[in-house]
Image (tube, rainbow, N blue to C red; front, side, top):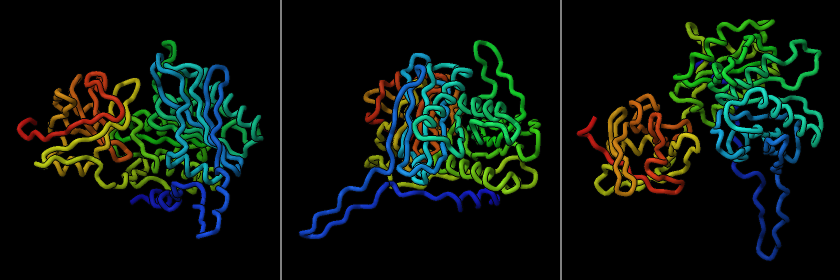
Length: 387
């Protein structure tokens, strides 16, 4: 097991779900007053961009800004920050402000999105004062934004900076805005951490191996997730990456061990913990009923409360075909590892980083095809005759 992985696991402190101590009271003694909230959620709008900021009661002068990925131009603008997500809940409990902007519009937005992130930082400063550290974590298109921020910050340590370090998760480094390629200098001036799924390694690895920062201290760190998918990264892995970036800033690049011999990246995969099954197993043991937890707006992918052990219990094997039933309709589906496990238009089911399952169509809209919404029931049935 890589040494960095052990260090990050040691640093990975998971806070309890409750933010305050439970009120205790005895018979005939009134319970104490409810504790003050440990954080507040602030919302607003800046130049058409909506924002959400989770602000702790005792701020430690540190900020994490979240840069989301590409969204359908027709979708509503949403700064969808979940304060209960483990990585961000943990940081807030330690005193960080965590904030997110919707950007001023959806679609491919680079230049204006950078302005929106800067404006959000300025708004937090105007409300709460100057920070001591500001990080950016970006997914996909947001990962490209994070990379551009790393390149465009002043290189001199005595120059004013907006940001101190960034994390780029499966960054879309080849994205084009208005048919123009985004110019990357490959010269990061602040710490840059890449996090990439194993099916998304090429862009991050190409950048990291050809980067020419002004010093070895600014050589990007490349963290790998041994799981297929795009931005298929769970909250514990995100927290591990944030811990690594903060360790870099606190103790220098040399504090982070090198990858194993013959490898370029460090594996920080942290598999989701198994939970008691949430599906209703059929009497014959050959299938089960599951519930829809989420439907993605842009692609119509469907997130269901099915875990790997549920597939095993029903005799549904990896890379084999089975049946997904919705009402009186049946869809031939493959239990694969990602969308490319099937041909265009076909159905696929694969595990998510957080332990449950996505079902969707390769270049198709599963939710629309099956008229699925959150809370609906989906039936999974084994079909060994069809492979």
